[in-house]
Length: 542
Image 1 (cartoon, rainbow, N blue to C red):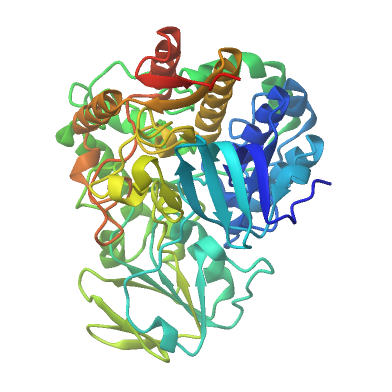
Image 2: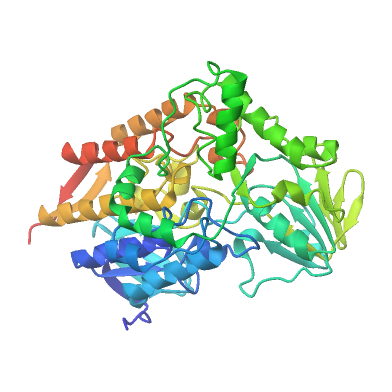
């Protein structure tokens, strides 16, 4: 075992985070022969899937696509059990990968990076942890995840509540039994939509507090059949290439027709196929203009609202659950198992916070503008400070001592979502302005890790000490990301994609919607053009 007890140490690279990004980055840097330390706040690998253990937690990308592609042997030896993998299965997979590639010996668990300062004279990063250790590293790689900084609701009084409070992003590892309890769930994003049906099966009474309804589609989850697993394993190489060049990292047929050109019957049949497919992307990408034209988008939105009205018995509840204030797909859409059906249960109540705003949490429960409801437990399904939260949680200071928080005061600025001007040798895996959360994260993670690894290898082969994007390249990329985003309906919506869920956060569309394949080609083109937009500095003469 490596000795991680020293208070000062020197390595080639520090990786922050031991989720799927950090684990693969460690593996590739080891193959380059670099001494590498991974610092992880949790007690084991898994990242998002280590922390998010709430009832019903499940990935909304199919399991055989949401997995590493770098090792054909790993692909063949691991067999997924369900179409959409639940959290325990994904965590088990992450642990298997850590064991198979002997990763844990270079990971320091139960430790947070609190500060990272660039030493301009030494051209190294000084990385400080909450255990008092300082690590000097040539490269600093942030593998902190896009959805890993839980966000509490802006509701006064939580500290006074006499019952138990849980956040879906930091769920107790031993689980929670809600049997016989009165439970309040605040939030109807992805974690709320997944957990509410499961909690409803246990709770004596369940009250769901909803501010903005979400578009959700049935997952139609099921056990995988041996034949389909064998077929995918036989064709994995071809499938992986399709993933890499697809729009969202999930291969689907490209649409050729406008929703407005199709007849009502054609649209309904197409949307019904997407609804029945149990796919996050199929319905959204059914027509060429679903995400770019409000009128076209409304045809898909109304189709989903029609399904909600069919499922939910009470017309008033169905209407409250039907989104109307934003285009379909511009908030993260969800896949569910019996979410809308849950509101037909007599012991489940929906509170529409648009009509009766939430005022405070009291010692006994939750008070809205019309009444106080008493609970034994409250669940915050209030999401994350997405994209930038985990990066800004670390006090990162680049050239001239400038903090990343200051640089991003008006919104994140990166070049390709990979690097930040003024912060040499600092890489961000699936950082802001890359496809990241608008893609199958595994595809984007592998692409970034491999790009970073190839870049470091290039630097070593050419005796280059540092790499830093130019301000001009960064500005041009930020403008391009904004331009592509503005061609869609995404910026019209107050979503966590825009940072709108965090008070005071700059309102900027933080992901690149140009497509996973297009983005990959751009990154490859930058390298082919001699790392266009980057400035290198040579190593000092020996």
